[in-house]
Length: 453
Image (cartoon, rainbow, N blue to C red; front, side, top):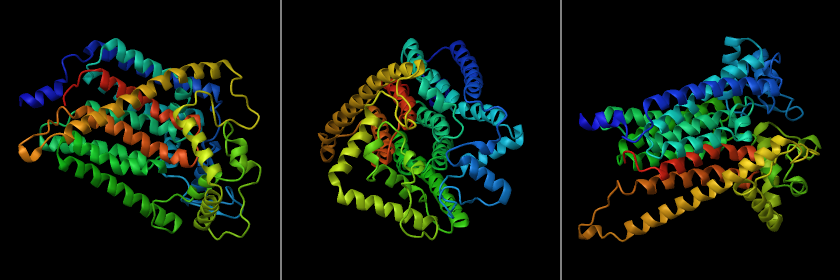
């Protein structure tokens, strides 16, 4: 009972209740102001929901008009696509459309209100459980929540980043700041919550697949018990089966693969990529008619196989160029402070907002590499200490002391599994934005004394 009470109360040095109340009010004001401002800047009001770009608008239009999760003759002449976009975003927006009417402005306001609940919950958990100095905690979060590009992506409607940013924030807040409850049933509930967040990520972006499968191992380390990890993994497995069956029903193949994987791989590894990337968006290749096949394509899976084959042929035939492109993509993801993914002819530093974003990116890159170096030190230091323990002679591992190791392992594991897709395919500045909040939470977790290991 005493342990359960301590778990509910949290650490003694957490932010006072009145501070948490003010944080909550500030987050509500932030969500409202940000959503309204983005609506005005992007002229969302009065537009239909099916006007969204990035393949979502035409998909929503197809579902509404034909009843089928299938876009025909839009993304490629005569080709039908069903396994190109994951279903959570279009169906979620259609649900909001029924609530608010066919007005993208109102739908966007509701979307921001719903998904910023994840951000709010993450911040309140950290405020309630972190023992980092309150001023430092608020400063780090304020830097994140005012980064221009991060704000644009967090309040976005037609990009996956607008959905995964909040879910990732809450996931790491629970994983790093909320200790597993002492009672077995509550502990399984804690793990089930993590598993549910992973399933949300799985249905938002296909590049989250490996992270979602690997994360339950961190649950086992955190709980020092395989049963919560098994619960989280079981929920993820159900999500994987549901997604594969969704593709079977709508695209004719029981698979977790996206039929746009080959297309994206070829855009990042083609004879034309080096000339425009970076800083320009590789969608330019579509606009210039360079993403076309030299033979008839049977269906979306043949389309995927064809462009994947061309990408692999280019890589095998041009290993030096491929390596150079990989280095460029890695630089975009891990080092660049200027904007990337621009439209052809657009200037990088043409506006005050771009200069402001550059300054924020310099700050973020410093924090980012601080976190990476700290995490590497934590992993290798603890690994060395564990390897020196002679278990056969009665030595024991102090798992409480290894908590920083597991936190660091989670951060580095996420970076590797998330960035890998973009380093092989392609990366823009917006692809880096989901890493910003986990980086801030990692530093807060490490700078504060461990709450409850």
